[in-house]
Length: 120
Image 1 (cartoon, rainbow, N blue to C red):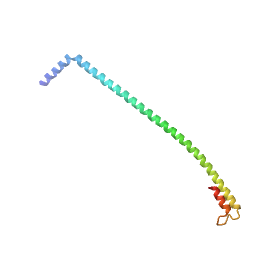
Image 2: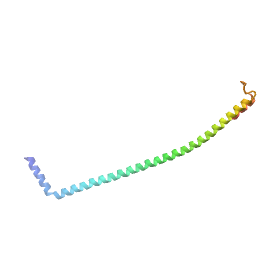
Image 3: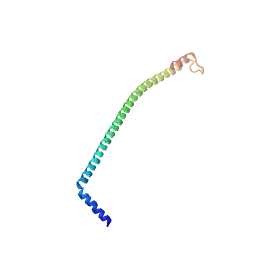
């Protein structure tokens, strides 16, 4: 019985102060909605900022990779040229050794030493 009288008393309070309660609830709803909106805006701004940073990092990485590729390509050209030169020198030495009268001997003659020194 006591709980019923309390409920009736509360209902009477609500009826009497309905306008104030409605305003408080409305203000609370507006505050919660505003907070949610502001939080969402901040989250979106932070997300966009970090996405921009990721894109900038990816672009910097791409540029660095392109620069390294160019440097490596230049080095490959130099190494291939040097490799061809060495192969040509070895072929030339083999041809000269074939015509050298002392080319088949186990020791090195003066001509053989000179040919080997040119390769260095």
